Length: 234
Image (tube, rainbow, N blue to C red):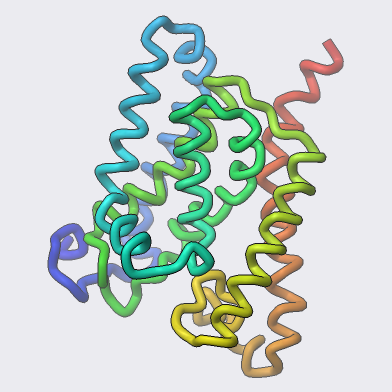
């Protein structure tokens, strides 16, 4: 449990007991929020739930956010940060248009819980803030749809993909031209088991990685399609 301290360099193994429990608790929290979402949305106290969620975002993310804004670049943000900051803005200010764009980037949080990229140890994170910050991405994504009733459609999905493609091109060029951190994993695999693709050829890696990202964005749309289908028939 040293991972949940402020000691730099402590981590936990993939799919060990602690990791599995973290994953199950996260999934359970999404299910509970999905089920209770409509009741929260119709409650007079909805805004307090929303403010509480925003408070958790600040609590978990502030130190990392501060470092990124002061030391980093807007074009060097990882996908989870793009999703978190965009969804936070959308939920905090009831901006439905923004939510419908940033919602589709939230797939990264599930991948983070499955294959968290701290195997070499923590740097700017402590264990609880790392998983807490990524958990809020999933909570915000569910909150916007189930509580606030924001419903992304296929057009929003395609627009979101175009925006991400443009941002990725700029971010990739920044890394290629100036070096630094490859936050979108355009040149380096996000997990060790994908390194063989990079070893084969950089183009081969991108030919697999880009369609995979597009597929996962479509997967984010699937729960909405399944939920809205019975409503359309009715």
